[in-house]
Figure (tube, rainbow, N blue to C red):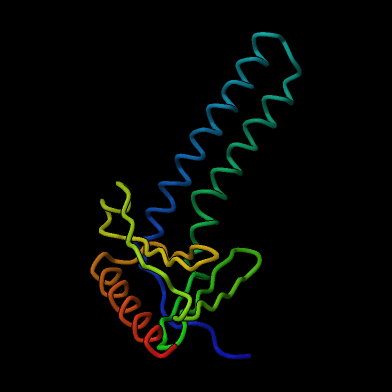
Length: 159
């Protein structure tokens, strides 16, 4: 089996993904708080409150600590002259090859949280789907976007 892609995304992605996990966890805590309130108001069994609280704590650990760490360790990419290789996944590792001749256009995307950390996401569009390389430093993302665009044009000229 061929070696995987060599390049990692920015370590600052961990902070961004933890913020996203914190937002998701906040929603779960509101739901758990609602369940606990209903348990007290309607005199339901106490174990329902305990389960809701424990589930919220476990979800917080998974969303804020575990998933960002594993996701960052697995995410890799490499741009070659003829293809772009992406590797990602938490439990199931997925490797994708995007031929340069299939690339239609390349964008960089930056939301408010990514902008705060100086990061951008590259989206690579083909006729069938859109691929992403998340959380790259903005300068690196701009350079990579230009490089992919240049290589895709060269590949198109060869066809």
